[in-house]
Structures are given as C-alpha cells and as structure tokens.
Image (cartoon, rainbow, N blue to C red):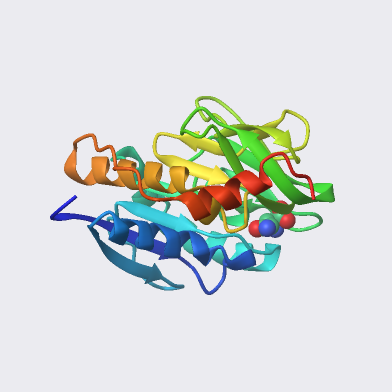
Length: 242
Ligand code: GLN
C-alpha cells in the first residue's frame, strides 16, 4: 500500500480517555504502519480549531468531562456535519459515542447537547451496565465484536441510524432492544471499551479502508495481516460474560 496516507485526529484526549480508549488510536496508527500507510496524526484539545480529517476518534468519559466536551463539540457542529457528509470516518466510544448523537440526558442535570452525526439520543438509566460484551455484526468478518461496557446511559437509535451489531452477551445500547452501537454513513459509535480496536482488528482495518476511500475516492481492500495474537484475544472473549 505504497504512497498512501490518511489523517487521524483524536478529539479531546485529555478529557475523554476512560479505560484507556487511546488504545484505539494506537491501534489505528500501528495498523496503518504495518500496512505501509502514512498517518498524519493530531490531537484536538479544548480551544483548538477543527480542520478536515479522514478519521476522527473520541473516547469515553464520565458525565463531568462530557459536559466540557459537549460545549467544545457544539462550537464546530456544522464543520463536523459537513465532514460527515463528505465521508469522513468517526469512531466514538461510550461517552464520546453519546455526544455523536443528539443529546445525553444525565440524572438530575441539564441535557448535554451532541452534534447529531447519528440519529440517536441517550438518557441516563437507573443501573450501570458493567461487564463483557459479545455482539454479532454483519459489517466485518469474523462476524463478532467483543469488548467491555461500563455505562448508565441508555441509547436509542432512530431513522437511518442502525446498530453496528446485535448483542449476544451483555447489554449494549440499552439492555432491551439488543442493539449495540450505531452507524450512519461513516460515523460509528460503540459502548465497547477494552479498548475496542486491539481485540477487533478486523473492525480497525474496516475503518482504515473507509478513511482511504474518503481521501482517494476509491475502494480499498487491505491485505490480511498476521492477527493471530489479536484474534486469539478476540476469540477468548467471544461468548464470555466474565
Ligand atoms: N457517562 C456516560 C455513562 O455513564 C458514559 C460513560 C463512559 O464513557 N464509560 O453512560
């Protein structure tokens, strides 16, 4: 994959990096290197301007950090929507995922506005969903996604926003409709910490392919890497609640 490049920006890593969600960014950068793809990497912190990117990542965090990030995201809502509509890839984890939707309503606090890249909304529930998750997806092969969830938010999908997977172990978006995560165009959200991408290398390469497609306006199928360790970790978790 010579002479290919993608830009990756990590949104508000100092505020939203619960459970080491930065591991997703490390995975994307490392896998690009293994594929021979150059990466222009940047971190976006409070007060920074937003430039066009091929891929944005935003991690999870507690309600307080989400409040601060919500205010920052809203300053650039129209820019993010324009980039979504041009095919930019977004991956949001848990709290970051919630802010990619319309809003997150915490307990006994003002609603946190999101940037509506996803037609979804989140309301704080009365219990925390904590534990391993296995979910069945049709986006990538192998058709499973694994991770760890820890959230009280209950997320509901609307319109053309669809889940990335259906839960077979764990709770996912709301513990009722069996959906996990969300996607619309190239915007993806998931409740899976772990961090998510190291144990789901197939999904990581899928996102890199989409980012390449956005930048070069062409389809890309990445060659398979030797993922025996990654998939061993993945398969160890498939079906496990504890
Ligand atoms: N504060 C949000 C919730 O509890 C998100 C938590 C997280 O990012 N793990 O649902």
